[in-house]
Image (cartoon, rainbow, N blue to C red; front, side, top):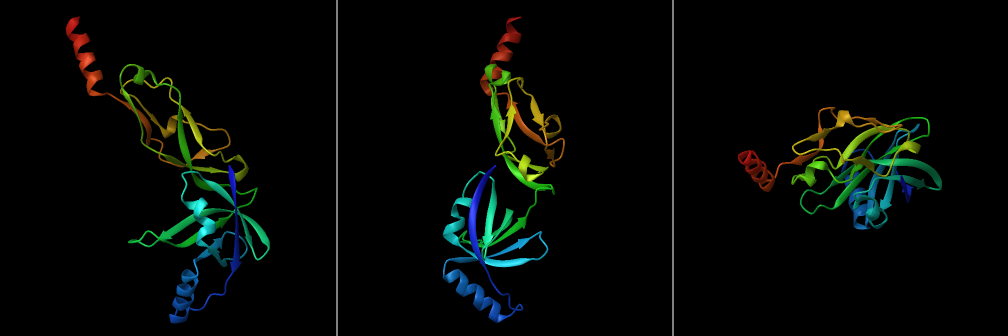
Length: 198
C-alpha cells in the first residue's frame, strides 16, 4: 500500500465557545485544517494545510499516512472527513493511529481482471461495489483487491462470500453483490432467435 507523508503542528483546544469558533475560523482563513488523531495513548489535536492533503483526499487510492506532528512520527489512516455541504470545501479530518500488531478496518478499491464468459456471450460486466471493507494488519493491506472474472457467466453475479484474500478478512455482508454480468438486449434477442430456430 502507498504511503503518504504529512506534517502537522499540534494545537491547543479551547472549551466549546465563541473563542474556539474564532480560533477555527482564523485557522481555515490561513488555509489550514483542524484535524484529530485517535487510537494512541492520547487524542492529539493538530492542524495541517489544505494543500498538503489534496493528494490524499482527491484520489480513488487508499494510503497509509506517515504523519509527523511536531517532529514525532506516527503511522495512521484517514478515518473520517467533513466537507462544507454547499461548497464541498474540506473542513475537518480525523485520523486513526495504527500499529504493526493491531488489525485495522479500511476500505480498499476493487479491480476486476480477466474477460468474463458472459461478456463473450454478449453480456455487460458491471462493477457494483467499487470498494470493500477489509480487516487486516496494515503490513498486509493491498493497494487494490484484484478479482478474476474469467468464469463469470451470462446473468451471473459474484458475491462477497465467494471471495477470499490471504491475510484479509472481508467485513461486508456475505450476500452483497460485487459484480455481475447483465443480459443485454442484443444477448436476449440472440438467445430468443436461437430458441426459435430449434
